[in-house]
Image (cartoon, rainbow, N blue to C red):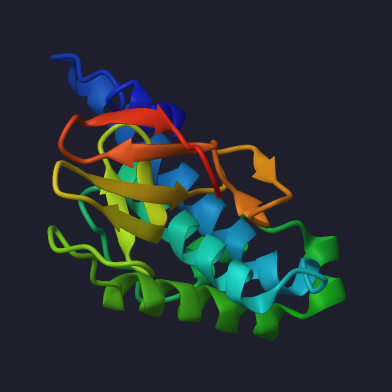
Length: 180
């Protein structure tokens, strides 16, 4: 979320900086996907539907910020090194490898809409990255999206990460929600 709000990383006209930035992004992407590989095993108490939603949002945003070139990774070897050995021992290396492969395959297969969004879609918001579109509210003057993302505070009433605002499509700004 922070990277999106800051318009990504600064791009200087320096070969050394560019190489270091690419290495950093690659390591950050691998670290994120490695952490997401243990996500479902660690968070068994959460709602499976919400976990799936959060996992997809995390995959999309990690790819957006750290893998904008959409590099392809054919195996898990580069990712496994970012997981501590005690975690590999506890959960099982083959289980984690399968999760990494599943996440990479899911990331490659994800298709997001550019327009004509409906409830249940993943919506790209220019300030905060990918979000989950929970509800579309339309009237004759405007369209509003109720967006959820783990970057927001937890809201007990809606049982998800929500900022309490609706996003006005026509005005391109957040408006305080009058109801859930």
